[in-house]
Image (cartoon, rainbow, N blue to C red; front, top):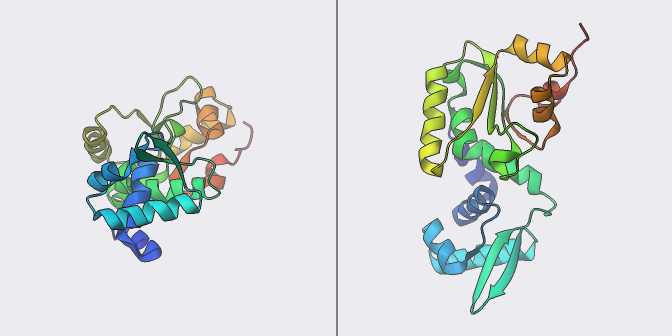
Length: 203
């Protein structure tokens, strides 16, 4: 399929705006000043200043002055925070790679990124970043996609893979691990969220 960033480019129009949104949602806890943003985004300073100002005005970014520099950071209370988080992670990074390679990966029914990966917040006892559920999956390709992102992020990505019937069984039995995944604020990359959360019939 076409690269997801092409869809986003048509939706949001501004290339600098897309780069800005991507940077802040991929680094939600990291403040950055104007010249740092110019280096990160590799765009002309006036265009970056204009986009950061717009994002501050609508409340997507917080701004704080430290010395003679103004630092910008993502506002997690922004009204469309969760929606934008989902868009970014379906378009770029590991989520975007899974979407682009969905057919090659095989029978992926669900793929999701946990809040440990998207927000850096661990939920429960299991530190899992990615969960994939499906059958006849190309595990070598999945591992390759994960390893590519590990190199870019310079950290290990923890992921788990379940077959569809195993997931349904563990869901019906209210398995602790599955319940912890279902209870947190995850980004559904592939599949229907309501179907994923739907309770199975009791055995």
